[in-house]
Length: 263
Image (cartoon, rainbow, N blue to C red):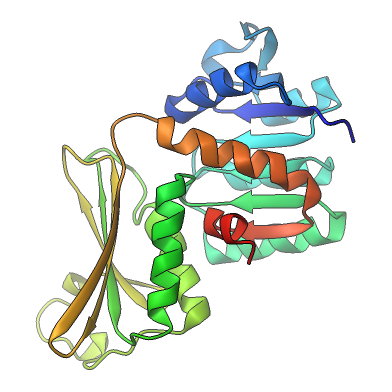
């Protein structure tokens, strides 16, 4: 494989995708080979053709090494599976995939010998917060997650919070002193159980995406929280790190922290 990677960005004119397209265009070791944007189909972006669909882009380009997807929860799984079938590595930055979706992606990626890196949040500081939470879960048996996002965010919980809950489940499930089903009043007030962790999603103005996991022991608490600002810049460095790593991988890697820590 060439030392220069050919990249396709799906959602290339979106909030994160546009920042990524500019960063790929500026990188010496990356080439924006094609892009996907329904609103800009038929145009060019940094000299690369813009297509209406991932299928069209991958088949037209023919030599894409990595697909970076920042689209929507209802299409990302299909995009990922199509890319894997084509032998193209995938970086999944779109939230909304379930544990079952990831199991299907993992199976196909292993079968095809293709790498996939998926993270609910490609911010490096968010990845470090997740790594700290996984360490804490080894020593503290009780925790819950609070998921903050903008009032208009359609998916709940956020990809960041869902990934954290599912990754914590790989360490162990938290202890519940009072089972949720024994809650008096409205059980929904206890949040949704994701991988055994109770997750509470708030959707309010002034938030972008913030994720807080609260661990507790008698007479003490530990809160690990990540707050994202109003721009897409925090996600660029981590996404490109994953894009550079994915051609060397086989199967699914979940969490940017896994790449950062080499675990």
